[in-house]
Image (cartoon, rainbow, N blue to C red; front, side, top):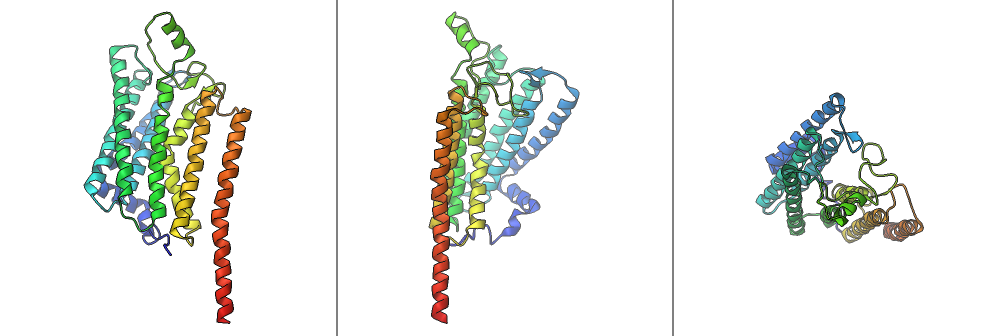
Length: 338
């Protein structure tokens, strides 16, 4: 029977110092980018303390702070995943380093615009702002292409534990799908933008994350997700961070149910991944229907209940059935020995 050995055999590799050393060996470039993001977090915190400017109802330095945190976590996750590569490590270095450069470019533009007191996203107000916004779009597209390559690269990596390998793959796939939700923000127009277009005018800002209202209204603390209208950002956030949560799910499955067969643990990873992806889809539909993250209609509630009951029942069957079979087998062996 296949056992969960890929992470148990080398528990020392999870120590922070060893993990940093492995990141450095895998890609010094992405390690440097992670450290730069950590430094930027400190700069943003200072900015929040000394700069009282606001943008769309929030302190100017909140957005670069959020992007610096997200960028550090993203680059750290990509680098960590690459430490499991055993074949064609030069490809791993290219994917990791490329992601680091592209993420640094995007966060750099967000920070530059914040320092100028301007919006970075959807900004077409001047040729410079439009060029910066278009550059961000290009950087994001290149990251998506790298992540597509990353998915296929992981598929052909030999690993002792296929369940954990599948968790890495599904994490990248769901993160990729989360990135695609960005089109729902860039392709839609706010009511004011739509009115300008109907009158034949040109837009200073094109796109928005709020559905049915202008960006910058009442929102949840720090994240700013709208509490009065639909907001695509929750689906975008949870989708992107599937990159971290699904591999963590794989580790949890190996820790909690390591006695299960490799095939059954792989099915558990798939079940959890599909439940999570369904949840992200419901969040997206909730936003597109004009409902805030704290607002629920009958359709949204039924969708969430269906996901919980269906995947919860399947999860319970996959774990309890095998446990029962193992206990029965152990009892049979004990009776035979006696």
